[in-house]
Length: 286
Image (cartoon, rainbow, N blue to C red; front, side, top):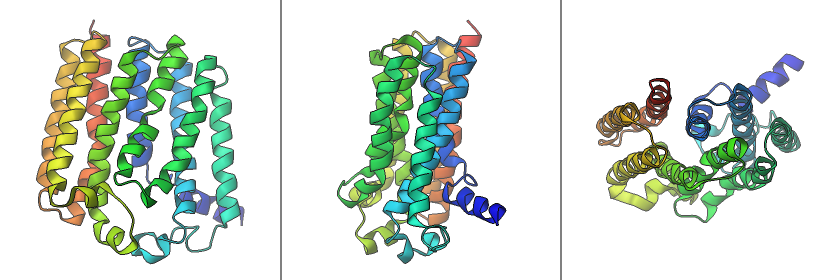
């Protein structure tokens, strides 16, 4: 039945788990708001929001395709549509390609520089799942892939990518290492068994310290970006709120329990939201 097939695609694309969309959306919105000095065109906001959903969904499909032989050996992923055989490999590839093409069509009304930047963005999203085979900290690569909407937002609004965009992107890389290390701490035993690289394995017994240092670097880089963009006190209040959230994550991950590490990972939505709230409020209150 069509409804059953759509439900399987819904699961394959992780639309029932929006945390990935949110972790991709918040830094994109940081870029959109700063590029437009707090007054973004709503068409740009709509395009980047929908593009975020489409590219994250395409990324999930590619991830499951890349891990189709690995996921069979992990209890948490054995029942995924592709792994269980309910969705074919061909369907998965066509879904990923179709969603990526649709995302590209979305950006056609924007500045041509945005079109050019879509190609490295697509490459980063499509290649990330394979980096776990050889890259010691694939979470850093994820941070670039998840943050590439930042320079694209500046390209769409300004027709160029100023230095502040790259500072924001670097901040997102540090944030991604922090939150995805928390996620990797949940899967540490499975990753060891399967020979997959992750930051949790790379940092070893210093994993908690590494996560907190990455949060600190994230906040320092965001503070630098705020200074470069001429943002005021309200923005920095948002950063203080984000710092408090990072502190709360320490209380969750310090025991390295799977349940609390996963809870910390999910809670990163509020870290990104706090930064955006301070950013948006600063522009409103000017």
